[in-house]
Length: 366
Image (cartoon, rainbow, N blue to C red):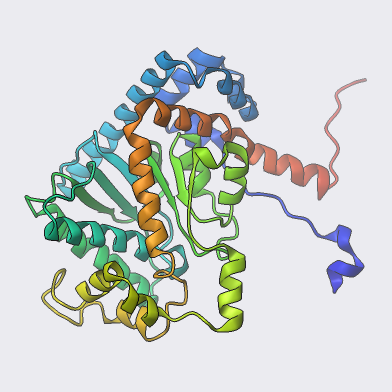
């Protein structure tokens, strides 16, 4: 009602990130390549990254960029080896989800996909994937038991997958503990795939997707939060969007028509993954993941993890197919970088200054 009476009192500003931290400081290799290609104006005016669009078809630049990405992947791999003792294939697809652990952010959907791939490869020797490394990093609130159990599941799946000689050559799972800015600075710029898979309508405007984008990663996500604006800028052909839209979810909630058990009974893949929580595939204790199982099956999957599962699996298959065309992949990454300047915090603060605080630019004229 207040908006109806005073519509001009309300507006929104998209969050931003500082390119000084998330590009210039944390990724000197990419910064140098950009300087060589478009000059150094982007350092003080990040929207000048748009100049890169004139070069995205350049095969020599694509190759140089992929060399930069490989160097960043080697830096991350060295960190993981030193701190976690896990050997990583730097030529694999680096698939990353790093953010606060919350049910609506759906790290569970991500690890369910990993579980599905593992179980399917074990059942069908003819089914194999292009090598992929799944990275997770997150913290859970002290009293958030479900989130802590999801972290435990990720780590126990990692233990099984990474120690299976038949499967580990195709897939590794890495959970980096104690997520921080320092970890983000070496994780985000090594990513090939940026996982932004929250339930549509739940993420206001996170900024992790912008940091990944600025370093070239392709967004794999729902139409939620800043993903919407990222896709508006790069185009659907340079992102991978899947899943229910907020209107679909609102309708399911309004009509009370969603039933997790129906999906469980209809889908062999969903049933296989859910059953593996209790059949000692990942733990010798069949009740180890009782909270997760109950949240999905007894509380009817509040954040529609199972509803989006098949669409997510298909989207991941499309990501793999994209990666097979290295020239197209490099071009997509370069387009993401070129379009990332809009998401600079410089633009956000400028909009606040002009449209909310009504600040006038300083004038030094006499």
